[in-house]
Length: 178
Length: 192
Image (cartoon, rainbow over all chains, first blue to last red):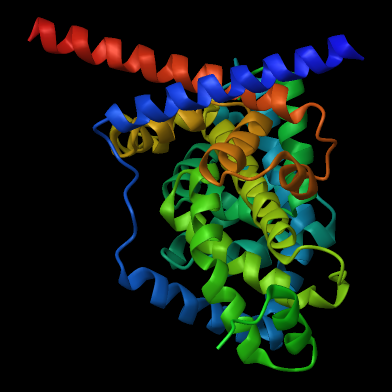
């Protein structure tokens, strides 16, 4: 019991010593956290209230519905890229097409995928690309989607649990630490 | 006039007074924003998290227990949202880091938020960003917010036992990071 108390006191003293040392180091540091402009706080409050109004109305429900519907297709696409990355790195990327990949999905997933891509605005920039989506080579498709910031909107539609699950899978496959 | 307590405001919101919730936003928006900013590192994400935390709190106020502390409950929501945002960013980085995807983009167009982060953040922010997830959260709650272990334990829903170990490890790491950076800066200055 006494040993436990001594250890705890030592640990508390170490914590205090380190925290003080760090505070002093931070004070000597010439770089500082950049603070938002003073107006920001008033604006944040107003925007939070607006977001609250939207959340209480039907608008938020339709967005979450779209995200839920799109998830199967989005997950399939991510796994497709992971598959490309980990299992067929030697093969020329053009040898499999997006068309093949999409057709391999179930009908419901195909619909969800197209709905989500249109919703995310990935195709709004280039209507010609949308018309021809099923005949593009993988090279062109991937180049276009990455350039359009597609990865971000894609990951944003995953639920928190799905994002965490996928990240764990990637970590365990690659053994990479973040 | 005496300011109403958090729990009094919560009760007023439950009674239909939306203005009472605005008071809670005023009271905590800066702390919630700073917590998120220190965890996720970027203003835009912290801004979204701060708003979302209040929205979620408002919508879940019915589940809030009267014997609980409002700010630890709100902090818990903000920490969870921040952790989710951090995981999403790691996922995006992982996918974008894939050899396949990088091959399609010219070098200058490749996304590099890490570089942006390195250039625009303080040494302490960069040191905190280098910590593992749990140490980062405990460090921010203890060092910046000066919360007691009891509150940290309540926010993270974890036993207080291991928290001090996590915090002391984080303090060691941050200190080493800052010392190394200072030494590297000195060498650079001497050379030039």
